[in-house]
Length: 347
Image (tube, rainbow, N blue to C red):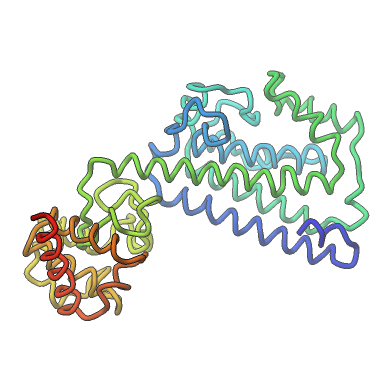
């Protein structure tokens, strides 16, 4: 992208690549904002660590886009920031208009609790769109545009950058760059660093949520052996990011809804499971999961976990379908065969 932007003949193409990159990165923020419960956004699972991941999810969102809003509008365009033109400070409930660099430790958590996460997300979205519009309006000759003392003073006078030592340096940092430098920081690389940190935060929150909970999902799948286990809390927690749940109203998959309506622990307790086509069972390749549910009904959850451990020792696979196949009876036979093998090894 940088090389495309840096040549006049490919400048327009480079801007398109940049905007597409930003859209792809923003989809990760959208996913997080849509998938996780409110409390996830003010927890700090890496509190005290040295790095961007030591913050909260919603702080990260606020920080990324306050910086972008200030740079896009106050510094480059010299017009009103989205925060003010859209009344977003009131909508988000933010007690500050700064980038948040001045906040430390528990201050970050307390600040995060005051924010309306949905409003912050929509603010971020509005800033992204306004910046994309600005980027598309640039010409190749704009890349070498530098900034004056007047520009610097305009940023300072906005009071959107704290005078705290951990924040005030930003003004000089931005103003010493030309437009090409700002395309990298903050319009692309800054996003990448903070969104990677957000992914670390949400993955750790999912792992903590799943710790100590029943590892057998309502559908019968073993969460301990699911390829999503590093970034999904499972259907027995509020941190469920299973793809089937994410596509449903309320982020609850049909199998979980059905089990809750019937007051049963899981599909393995349902007498209609063989012919069931609800939720996860509606796909053509999930008889393997149904076979696991039938095995659990017959032998119990602990035995299923032992068998799954055995299968993972013998086979390198991500999805259980790769081992059990798509035939329900054959899948159950493979599980029972390995159950007997585990029993022999135990003896």
